Image 1 (tube, rainbow, N blue to C red):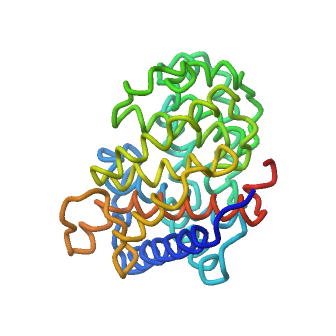
Image 2 (image 1 turned 90 degrees about the vertical axis):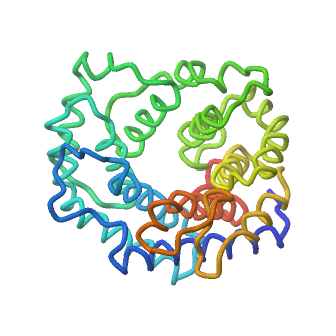
Length: 312
């Protein structure tokens, strides 16, 4: 795979700055779980979900092995901190035991298991509940089913799904009229690709019709969301481009994200003003920083032969 060196340099700088901003925020005590957090998580999207997303990005930095020493140390430090906040997996275990059909403990644990953080009791519990009819009867949409399946694959659990069938159930699997895409559907499309390819490590697992469809329409969709300044979604589309094989979107998306990134590394979610309060900033823009880190990591991995390029 050949990618323009200027694009790689822009991506590397974007990802490094975003990772540094995340690390600085968490080191400063912002975006942390409260000491009295309980496993029922009345507001899971408040801190718990962002914390798990940052752990996901960090695990990919370590998995793909293309980051410099400083970035690798920051990623490991963030994982250690998140694992400690989750009580070294005990919180995930207790939450899964209490709420048998929820999937977030499984999906969160996969990010840690990917790079060596293990919890034997949780894995035993996950194996056990995977045999319950109730777990498989829960009605969740297609890309979410893929998220669960990929988490099981990463952890090494025994249940093996029919990947072709799961892919066919998604919006992307139907190859719909491309002009019918909407903001929420676009996120379903990106996550379908993320989980089918395990964040770029298995590009060959994306069915060829879906790959051809994306190659035809990704440039159009990127232009649309760049025009209206939906930077979070622009970043996700760049991840998709890197996950499906030879990147084809060129430099425009990378340059646009680099242009809106602040000196401290924050990447704004959209065109709305950024609140300067650190706690408010990480709550509003953490996801876009995560996206920037993952986009840069996957692109560099595929270009430089890291773990994410092994199957491609």
